[in-house]
Image 1 (cartoon, rainbow, N blue to C red):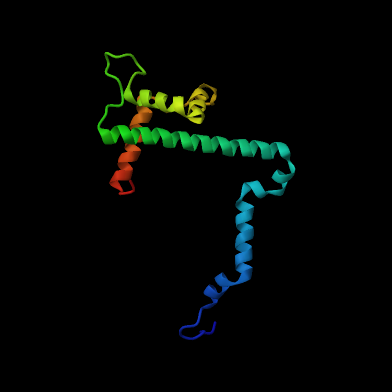
Image 2 (cartoon, rainbow, N blue to C red):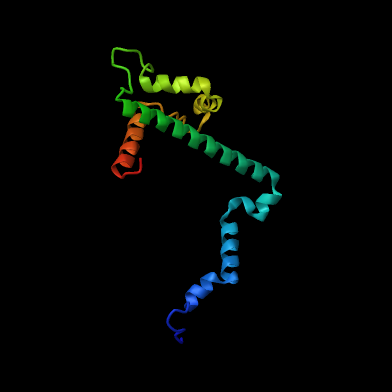
Length: 146
């Protein structure tokens, strides 16, 4: 290989800037995108299932963000999460705020109501989940992301 001289772009940088490389990269990214596969585009049922799965993932993401916001609010205010042992179960601050938000957010309420229908029946309202949320927030604070 010959040198191209000082200040001139090398072969590799020229290649990365070439239209052929950019076209190949775009084709690769399109291939990785599941929704643009030809068999998926032609099969209406598979496409419908994929759209439903993506919508479910979005609902889960929004619900978890809501639960993390509740956790963050209680932690910032120094408010206890769970009821004392003498009080009735499900009467803690975390569950009460979750119920309050569910009354005003139909999509969050639907997500909570659908918990028994999920394969693992997860609702993330138990003390273990609350502790995991606190650990995640503590990790963010420790690493300066919050």
